Image: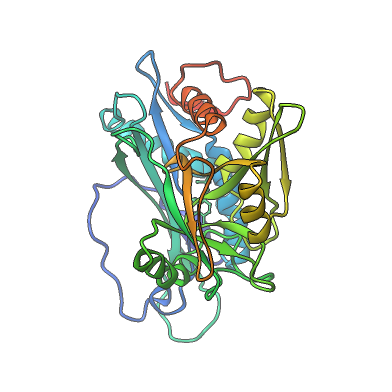
Length: 327
Ligand code: PMP
């Protein structure tokens, strides 16, 4: 779907996947006015297909557009475009367990010009790719690197938008994590370098065992510099449905280390569309190195993972109206 200043959205079309040709002065290549989304379509037990919370993705896409001085695509059009692509060939939606069809809606400036200003022409597209189960061999905890040198986002910056530049800014720290033998980067706040924000492509949750035997799960609050994940938001509700206390809060690297040592912080996990839920097994930084809990996937982590996946794959009732059936 194209957008042109003065004309709005026009010329929606469904075309075979093919390379795009691009002018060397395309503004996106120079000024990175781009946004994207990621969501999944799951096969349901009766053979139909449904996407998970596409309206939440559509609304986050609009919020990203506002931050990046881009036009807002109406939510219904976003959902219709995703549906149209899936309906083109439903056989692309895998029929087994946790496998899904991953959808990637995105928008970029399609105008040609060298001046730095918001573009007047954009292109919105959706592409898709089948995605196998994230952990085909069983859930495996990840090791994380606390990045104290680099920051991903600052207050007033683009951290809460799903824009390419955030990911470009992450790459050097991701490479550093790999050099230290870690799978993922954990980003800290840009001012004090101690408040936990999120992972490279996932939000984080901390599970505390309370003295009365109940469990409390806490996720870093939305400070404006981390992505408001849809999985994160869903889990606040699912955790409460399962009887846990679930809340947003502030957790520092010192809190993490201390509460892990004193045994009150029993589990840490990351969540996002791609992996759904991934346990965190160990933590490293320039100054510290510790095993999180037992280093193995925790009970609460696995319960939440099961509950969310069962909902997405249609094996439990959709009590929150989150599934969008395509028929
Ligand atoms: N943080 C970042 C930086 C991400 O890229 C993602 C993936 N979209 C998430 C968190 C998790 O968001 P969601 O649950 O909506 O996939």
